[in-house]
Length: 379
Image (cartoon, rainbow, N blue to C red; front, side):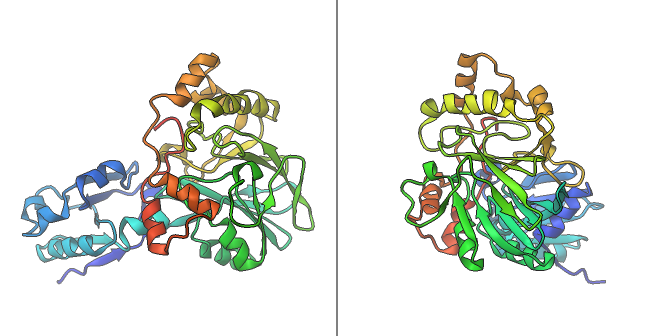
């Protein structure tokens, strides 16, 4: 029986990883691209052989591929992986697929998951951008929605709102992002929503926005789900957290489940380190420890729960998060300013894009965002 070559979508691959089903990945990108960023998971095994080493045939890798586990061939944009996968099928291997759209599609896939219901009615949802570790949110109530820290793939939120039977009233960025291009302004323009952005992060913005400032309350739906901004600088000077319905704390890039935000992406690590410390060790400590922390990023699969959600109780993080256990001021300052992980790909150009100063094409935007987010002090 002739084997059929199959294209596997990013969604299909992620669902398999979530179910912890074995998957073997042959990544045919260049060695440096593979070392920088790849598909990972508890049930994933992968190894790298550059495409150019396989142009004359796949005999060299046949003995390294399993016979009883699905094999997924991966490249940057699909073409090379499809070529290699075809050769593997011709060589008689079974259960071979290639990643449709390549790592570009993996980087841009958003997986929606419900976080929970809200006490005053409605619900909150998390969109997990699995290939980049970005997290965005939809707060839904009585026919309305607010989208927080949206990715540039805004069609996902529009489709979600349509399926939920709600209209998007607000698009909110907790800060000026440096690891990915915000979809906030584009989304607001597309659906006629109000776009919020912290004014201290946007003095050079070339567009009009509504200031996201502490002291104001944003209401979603007739049941009045309240979103209360809390000024929380440190990752950026304007970073503003959101308390939703007294249940959830959307921390942006200030606090993650396994780490804390880095203060250096605007070149002001030394200046902003005291702000970061004050936010984490004073402002947040005054909040209820029962709040569920919902960050804007995660770094590893270990931060996902069994349902693929990223969240944690604030009080618990003060016991286990290494960034919240640096009581000595000098020790904290050293941790957030020295020996930090590499900075995100094209982060300076991304910041300028989010200010409206650069207008990349879709292809250029996709290339700028390739790679992990790297917004935390711990790699």
